[in-house]
Image (cartoon, rainbow, N blue to C red; front, side, top):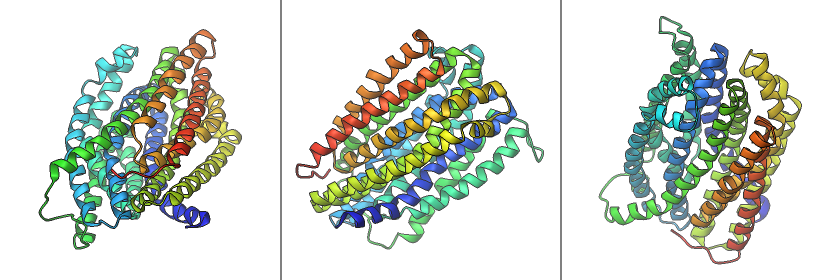
Length: 444
């Protein structure tokens, strides 16, 4: 397949995947903006809770990513009947981990205190986490089902469910944050209630679609299931390193947020705005990374190494082009973007000073995400996870500590450290992908 054909197919697959993933962060952005307009202290509570929640969410996403990798490879090899069995394994394990993730939220206050937050922020953040907790089982089932459909090359249902969720989230936020239509006025906790409600509805819509539209497609969605435990063991071998990698990456970002909280409440609120804008655009990169996993996984299933290289290169070109456009917007509109989130002049001033730099970070952060997607599709999961550990914890966190607290750069030092870590991850993962693409592919 020619490179231009790979690029075209990657774009077609990536667009709905980008929208679906961006929708998750659009909801967080809407929550952040609406809570920020409700008050600065509730915004700090929401930021603290989000620092923990994002780690839990991304660990869950990593654990369930075995679905898209295994389904894409099975689809590429022409073994359609295995795809539904992989999904069923993912549903059971996703439900279990979703319950476990929800229970972790009940430890929010001691965990936030452990990470150096004040008693006030820890208590407020914990209250938000408790309301979020009961939506995690639904989130894991939704994520697993979305990955299943993407592995089949059908990303549109997840995209459509996400668009509806974004609209509903904004409406319910208006009701529960500000106490409209007779509902209690709950601030940041109202945003958390909305998140859980929306997650359950998203899950029900997507699972219903699978049973209604795909039940008779010979995909193994129903019927007898031999070899469950062998398949479940294979699923865990993929999901655990990916979950660990996601968790370590997210934990490093949460550590930066905690550092911002140590500087001041105003700094924490301002940093949360800039980080939210990074995360929002980063979901576009994650969408492209998801497409790269499917395209590379299909090439591995066919044992076509030329297609593997071209699929990876198409994804890299796409993400760098998109993130460059985002960088231009963030550099030119930093003040206006900051004021969308808050009326507090001090908070918006800090955020505006970070948003331009965040745009530069996104080019390399997006690149390393897509390279990880390519490596996942080619069945390489442990070494890339180790390389990310080196980039985020070996470089980003210690450099952030030095720049923020010893070089007196404050929250700008945190963003510079973020940039250094993203560059390091891109270089290491790029070298790894070049090495992998020179040897025969291995299927899970």
